[in-house]
Length: 113
Image 1 (cartoon, rainbow, N blue to C red):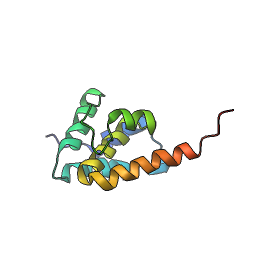
Image 2 (tube, rainbow, N blue to C red; image 1 turned 180 degrees about the horizontal axis):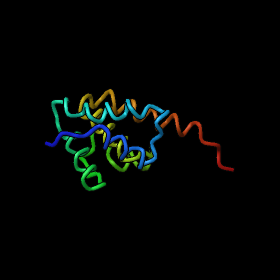
Image 3 (spheres, helix red, strand yellow; image 1 turned 30 degrees about the vertical axis):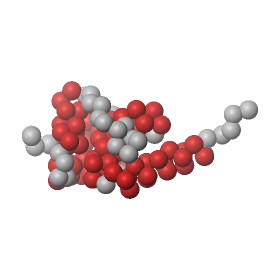
């Protein structure tokens, strides 16, 4: 696996719409730290995204898959990569957290008349 350049990754996130004032440096660090996980699949996904701009589908983990993250939580690709890393690290706990986030967001939507 190739070494990721922090400055290039940071610029790529800015190009994706991330804002420096809202924790961009922490997001960069979190993405780079995916390399330290025992399961390297999320880091490999990051490397692929940096090369191709695409995210590969992954097998559902505790009911969470790419479609859920994109459609229900409206995540951008870097956030999907981080969520995938979270799911690989602690599937049960992090799947519950992501499902609760979906529920929290749905509670905040105005009722349809």
